[in-house]
Image 1 (tube, rainbow, N blue to C red):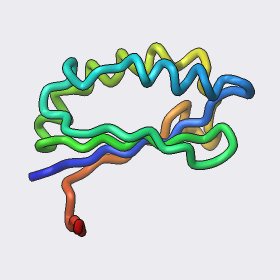
Image 2 (image 1 turned 180 degrees about the vertical axis):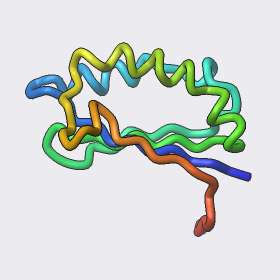
Image 3 (image 1 turned 30 degrees about the horizontal axis):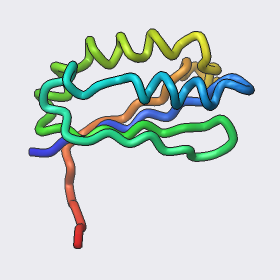
Length: 100
C-alpha cells in the first residue's frame, strides 16, 4: 500500500535558495521504493517536503538515506521550537487518493 511522508522545516534567514539547491541535488535512486518527491514553499522561510513511497517498508528502508540528506541541511535549518528540533515529520499509509 502506498505510503507518504511529510516533513515541515524552516530555514535560517537568507537561506531559502540554498535549501532548494541542496534538495535539487538529491536523487531518488538512493531511496528504493520512492515514487515522487515534492518540495512545497509553505510560508516565509517554511517548507514542506512530501514523499510518496511504494510502501511503509520502502519508507522505513530509506531512513538512513533521508537522515544523510537531513544532515546536509542541518546547518541552514532553524529550530522549530517546542522541543521539535529542526523538523516536524509525519508518515503513514495513504487512506484515500482522489485523482482525475
